[in-house]
Length: 459
Image (cartoon, rainbow, N blue to C red; front, side):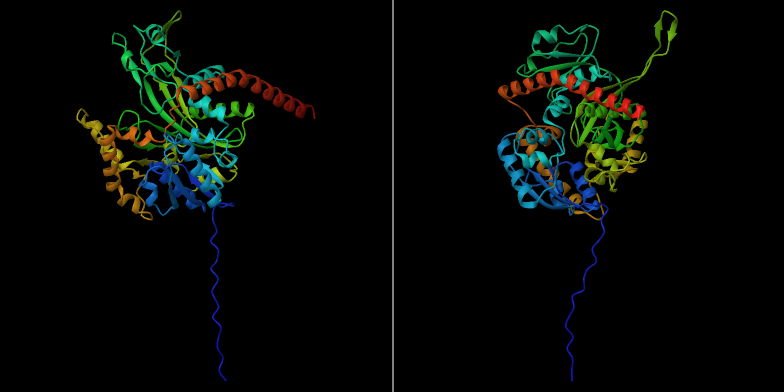
């Protein structure tokens, strides 16, 4: 008698993941290296990552960290079409979280689609506009006694001509709704004002020009607490603004600044998780100040020049780890801070460094950074994005040539939020309502918290 053994399928042991709640996550922009980096971090946590972009080819499309890449209409040109694509992806792929990588956050936050708003990692709409509007942001920082440069709202050419001490003081003139270094004019005493170049359909802000060390911070805020934090100095750029080298640094004053902003938002009743990124300048005292008592050392001044409520390059300082990914999706027990020795570079950007006027010391410093840090795109476990770099750069420069744009501007063009005159008026009206209400909301919450604290003391 013979016996036939029935084949038994060997059960594969389920792999344990760092996260307790694996999620389907949609990243809203695949062209930036930071998107690729974040996708890898999220995959390492055990999440499934999807990407949506209006470019057919982008760096994240070729990564094995991305389950699927989708092409959508450019939100800059077809906002409704972009939102519709996002909504369809949410339903079809059961998306749990949408992480905005750039100004898509504004296009999505203005949607009336509950499916989008419920999954979007963002503060309320009025907070986004308060932070994104450089004038409203500067006004708010002043009211809560946090450092910002002296600033003036310019709604006409006359406002610009009548800036205080224009013959003695330098200013940075920029649109209240702008990004990076686009349309920024450096007004210098004795130099002709660029009045003919300005689009006065927009509102402009003139900020006191401050010289000093520049810093960029990135943080995740959860229920008024800084849950994740990274900081780097602006050391290597390709256009004076777009940073291509990131080295983690510590700065207690900047961490306290971000903590104070998070606390103020909590006092207003803003809950949930969202991202905040700040650009800081720490003014270096160049000489002693004369006072009545005699010479006195000048004090260092820390100011924030703008805020972005979205992802920024500070994410690179968490590369290769699960800390930030878990912070975005799980409830962290303590604040996650980027390792003080973390270093990353955007290799193509570092190779574009202009060194015709550089000294030997500057050249050696640059070469040390180039050879002593890892590229944000390269990964032995995910080689295709690196191998596709020549093809992608060629296609990007071809687009730049056709549209007569510089590379940083081309990268952002079709995802930026550029409202028309009617839409701007609605946004300004929202800002006026928010300005009237924020102090009242904050005051009520503060009184409530003080009352609870007093009651606890009595008990």
